Amino acid sequence: MDICASMSGTVFRVLVKPGDQVQAGDDVIILESMKMEIPIAAEEGGTVREVRVAEGDFVQEGDVVVVVE
Amino acid sequence: MGGKEKLLAEKERIMRGGAQKYHEKNAEQGKLFVRRRLELLFDPGSIVEDGLFANGEHPDLPADAAVTGIGTINGRPVCFFASDSTVKAGSWGAKSVEKNLRIQEKAMALKIPIVYLIDSAGARITDQIEVFPGRRHIGRIFYNQVQLSGVVPQIAILFGPSPAGAAYVPAFCDLVIMVENNASAYLASPRMVEVAIGEKVSMEKMGGGRMHCTVSGLGDVLVQTEEEAIEMCKRYLSYMPKNFREKPAVAESLPPAEGRRIEEIIPDNQNVPFDMYELIERIIDRDSWFEVKRLYASELITGLARMDGRVVGIVANQPKVKGGTLFIDSADKAARFIWLCNAFSIPLLFLADVPGFMIGSQVERGGIIRHGAKMIAAVSEATVPKLSVIVRKCYGAGLYAMAGPAFEPDACIALPSASIAVMGPEAAVNAVYYNKIQELPEEERAEFIAKKRQEYAADIDIFRVASELIVDDIIPFEQLRQEIIRRFRLYESKDVSWPAKRNPVHPV
Image (cartoon, rainbow over all chains, first blue to last red; front, side, top):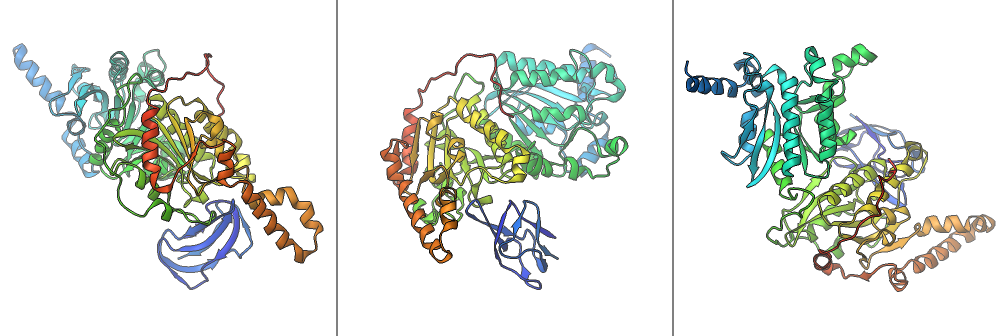
């Protein structure tokens, strides 16, 4: 399952690493955009397979930030 | 057979609808027979049906696959058009179209609401010259809807497909309720799409109820069962007057649901999100919330509620989603909801916590300036009582979009947590002092920036803003509900009009 950025912004915090277990609703990334903290959550539970961004990266709305299986 | 016997036999035949196998097929999908839907929606025994005998001379087209008439819902007369999907898949023939037109004309003449119960395969293509191009054909259904729009409430319930020709019926209604997995709307079916353009896509993905309620914005309310859909329709009508000349009925005043105090809900740190729903619950009468487009553009909340028993329309930013920023879809969602409330004399309450409209290349190329202008035009044109409450931050055109002072709100009031500015401290300092900051040695920059941000924050302090008569009052957190109730009571006699013109040239 691809977790995508809900809006364009900068990666503020990466909260997970490959191998971590996440449940539905857990935040995986916090973006900063429009001076607000924008939490990005996993819609379903699973294991983190890939983290595609690092803190400070710019992402467009819709870019995949974390892959969970 | 004598006349009386024939009448009874014919009525019985027609009211059974189509062949048993179609009833069974519907039941397997959780679909009710059309006449059962009408029984659930309307007060018992209240329906007066017209056109029962349409196409009665044809053995396989009872009522020409459509039921039309007037019934009462909680005692109030409402017109209806309902397709019977057990007869020719509920498709539209010349008689069903004529029945539709007549009941719409009835709604206009009587000035009462109309509900479209949709479950149809669309136009009967074999009969196309009788139903498609002419003056009293399907196009006229949409023309009538546009004429009815804003005169009386129009509601669409999609119990099944609303395809091709029929797809526009929901688009012209005020409220669209969709039953998940059964409801669909699309201009061309997946089969036709593959033939005409080569795309292979499923019905659900291209035109399903969930897609329309979350992505396209055609649907307003997504439900799981037909019974739920009917309940939502009845509930919605209780917030509406019967036509544009009247105001909604006043209900019993109820206290709000209990929970955390507003002061606790709003974080001190302007950049940390909170849940606007929690604040709304603290101020509206309990159990009075009716949300429109809950699943679409959820960074902006639109819904009907009661305060002290009186209907209000609430437009509120949701800081938990995208920081409460206004986007293209949220601007559209707000504009439409504002038009709805203005059409039916429902006062508007704006609850603002917005960092502004979204910026960046993606939204600019999407036309965010046009869409934002659309929302601001709707705010400007609304002549119902308008109350703007600045909950927390309210920056840039966000202030304009949320009925800020220049947009003739009856009042613009602020909570002590409010902060109004063209932009936030960080962005402002960066804009004004960029060159100066670059000239400073690196180790001095942080201190300089912090100092300038502090000065700016003092400048946008809410007491300064009130001192300049920009906001009309600052309200203690715990008095917010009472303040809104008192003000709306006093604004009830509001009677202002807009300059005469043929029509505005709206931003779209």
